[in-house]
Image (cartoon, rainbow, N blue to C red):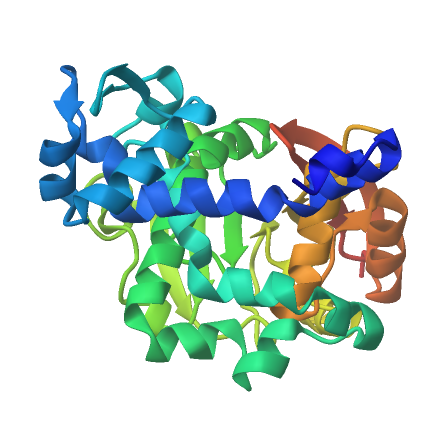
Length: 341
């Protein structure tokens, strides 16, 4: 009804933007209910679907009617539904499907975006303001949320890490040290792509307990080592390449400088620092990067950066900026070099 009385095109367009949360909620609920997983190759009745997902038949019928408006499922007969390409993409087993990433955010993501004005006014993390702790402490206490988050990251990593490994320039005999690498998925990809290099994963003791088994056993194990520690406090020496992927964007400049300073002090002269992040370019097509920039503010008080901002950050840390040396999808490999002795 509100849209019907809006004759001004600009007003109508802004109102349409304001209702985007509705579409997001529809997709999220479909994933939470597991509707796409409950439909196979043959159409199903509403009764069968309600039984499969544990929902009331009447309210699910209303929801399915709404989903078809968005092209998620098709009603082939009264109260009988089949897949569309869009609904198939929401299956948990869909190749490159978004379901795991949608689950990644959980309830906390919805709460944070509702606090956007707070973070814009204060510059503070909405997560810290609302929960009174950082996101990783929260995950330690809320295992289900933490597991959903890690699963979503793994879905993204399966697509990104091979591309990063291909784009990373390394030579036989070099040692790659990955900082804050989680389960070591990226380092595994690097070792698989570059059989002449060795790798060290720097992570907390708790994170190293869940490291990718392929790094601990099998042919990669001889070239892998683990270093227990927090890169904000300590970094091992002896690396030729210090690799850090999508971590600096979670931190403010002061924290980034602390980590980069730790690398500079520990690394040998001429070692490379490779930061893998999205870059803000100022181009018209970077909506996702700009959304992520604000998302990082909400989650952890961090931000996405421009190439110039990275150059300034490296300079302040006592490193020589080497420019953008590769790309992997939306990500860029931004390099710096430790000073010669």
